[in-house]
Image (cartoon, rainbow, N blue to C red):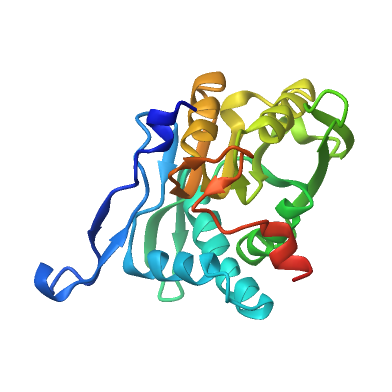
Length: 246
């Protein structure tokens, strides 16, 4: 990312119930917009901004970090499910009347990028009972500084499923992009992959949108950029450490 891109601050807007006048709403930083149709950013509601504020705070303890992260993950999963196709489905209610509704088309599974992505598995299970979940472990090669696949365990019929790829942080996008390559090598069509993510950098979001135009990214927030160490700023630190150990 260029220094010009990195210096661009995310926009601010008044946050609060629509019925309140702007003078009675606090101003908060909201997500940077990404001009790609396959990147969907959650609506920047007061609830979401409050939850993100809690998990970004360096003084938030582990128990609260887990609780508020899980609430955001639930929002992401619910929105991700909205992007799956549905078919017509008419049922009969207990009073004998018919109702014209819909039901999901096809089977789904989750795939978490270890280890931080595993924090999102419970949120998926809360929404999709008995959902199958695969694992992919990608770590940086110390010699090449590039991501390297170390392990994967995926459902045998994954090529026939819609895949919700789980990873809370999207910095440069190297690991997640490799994970998509793994899924595609197992026969999963690109358009059947949804990447669920809490916080992304503009660079990571653009990389996804450009390299995999048929894949959909659902994120809660696109941050300011990356620093010299490729950490997302303002970010929230190491998500895995804060969720599992700190």
